[in-house]
Image: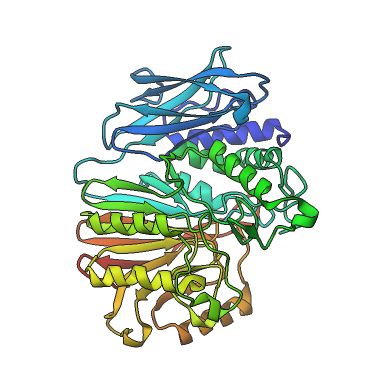
Length: 492
């Protein structure tokens, strides 16, 4: 079931689309209509793009085509890619467009054989030569039960972002009132079946801010737990009761299938682990820290046991091989959960629960002198900027010496944080116990922008106010840090 579509919603979506694409771009032509869930692009390469849409209201298979052009009016067409929106895939379709030029802005729209047409989106291919600069935005954690997606709209409005990286919790699986009461969901119960997960994605994709984000920027995704169930791992989840909710494997497989259907990521046989090259300037490694892990430990003794893996041996070995082989100036590592250790709040569902594997990865980075490594995570509903020492005992806070990499935690787009005195107490506890933490905020929602050039990686944290207000609020630059070429610690 879709959200009721009112004239106000149609006009609002049209205004967002015009604002997102700039002068000369058309407003949505089909809201509501066969492309009511919008369009998206993802997993860009230097020579291609992956484009997504869904045909709503269809009963059988539907032939569609994606038209790609150099102008927003779609007159200067460079490719037309036919595809079929199949009923067995919930009428979602992803089409690969190849033969494009590197580092180029393209516009695209979908059409069906009955004359239906989507509104126009835009995407960008990755650079093949060395770019002077690239900018990536990082976001995560969108609980509709706790707020509106104004954070997404702020990112969509930016002209200076090349790619958006979503670090997970793109949807939440709870039913009405199960996690936040500000807004309800469709379906109103927790998602258990394939149809449930499809309906939940459809509900999210009818959010105008999310539609604008997808239509404006290409997106690279990984997942966290709420695309499946709270604190999920391959063998189960803390948020799943097999007695009341049926076999975990059935729910897990339904959630994974819906994720593949509704998000345009390229599965080359290795799942969500992928790498994206931005010439010699940067390489982005995307990790699956949820779908291959061992069961979360029950205590710190188990957390430190040798051999425990959050990545799974195959992904870990592939990641380390790719990291060693990378010749890029900057190596960005996107995963869903925090790597940096924090003894004041051990999180056994994050890398704290897999300490041996964390140690092995940091030893490779330090021992093989791999510099320019920036980890970026989500999940925690807080903002962090950390140096990442291999050994806290030898780390020097005044200089940063002893750090082997840095890490940013991305605040939630709308999910709940701590507030007021509780947030301030948490922040004080972190600052007292974790000298490698350069910044912490436990209350605000927002996003990071990482701005890369050959001399430095600049990291800007933006907070977005008014998440609980349908009208939204202002955004502000909350913090800025730099990682300079040849160094392994944050300045700022």
